[in-house]
Amino acid sequence: MQTLQLKRPSAGVILWIALFFLILGLLSEASLRVAHAAQVLPAPNMGEPNPELGIKVARLDALAKAKGKIDCIFIGSSAVDADVDPQVMAEVYRTRAGDDLICFNFALAAMPTASAEMISKMLITRYHPKILLYGVGPFEFSKDFPDTSYRVPWVSYQAGDVSAEGLLMEYSFLYRYSVALSGWREMEQIQMASKLENTISSNGFNAYKGDLYEDPPNLSTINVQSFHPPRFDGYRAFLDLRLTTGTQIIVIELPTQIDFRVKKDSASESLYRQKFLDPVMADAASRDGLFWQTGQLLFGTIPLDHFADWQHLNRRGKDVFSRWLGEQLAEAVQQGKLKVR
Image (tube, rainbow, N blue to C red; front, top):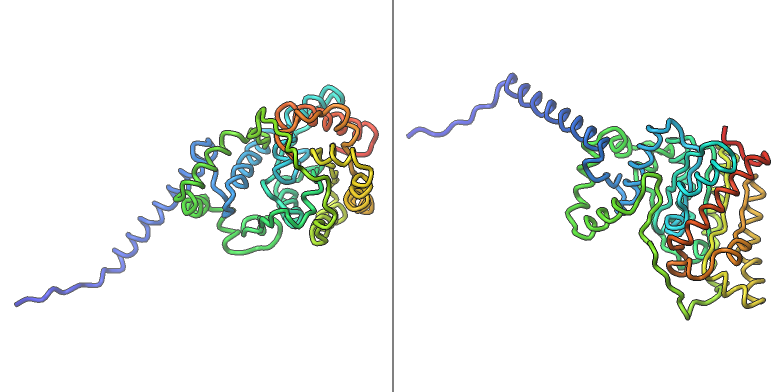
């Protein structure tokens, strides 16, 4: 009776197998790069569960390649996501200043102040914007604000914290998509990514609020006890980038429906200024940053029906606010407070 004998494959066979997988890997890498550039495939999530990060990186990469530069980038949470339309803003700026301004909205849902510094470092390193604009409101400094962390290896790598995973994510599209596939197995992630692919424009504006309007009747004015000191630490770390990188920084007071309640109550208005507005303004000024208040704009030209909910503007509101931002930027450049060239 003969027994089955297994022979070790020769070195030549092993070499051919290795070469086959190498060629297959290179072809896959090249195909993914072409498909990604042509936007045939969904944007990979860059290792972050929220697909918005990967989509906005892909959009910003494409804009930087098409225009050859990025002048300004907006950051913040979903409020900035819905409130700032760079296209509307740029049209007003062009009319006022006679020049083009290439801007992108890189706001991310539930981005806390603790993530602002690292996200900004990544943006400065990768795209070299002349100006960073950070939109904030009282909620961003509240202990109730979500502690979403965008400290994934790829973002950390871009910000200067080198790791093997961050390196692979940066240079290998095969690795990017293999990581993304793990998230695409879940229907919720697929639906979220599909929705964001449709609502995020080429300049980063997220049009998901549309014409919604809501006026919550039980919205409180301002809860002083909810302010969380670490939120201010994260904000100050972001502002320090003005001194360490030379990037010009503007902080924008975001319009919210809370302001209408505050305005009706002198005690709340005093607390709003004392506990939120004055500290964030002082921190910006002490680090050579600009701070733009929106109070007069809000009560003059953004009525309640321009809000999708208590902290997000709808289409009507974002058009008014974005036009105002274009005017502010043009005026600051003309007065020599900002340099874009």
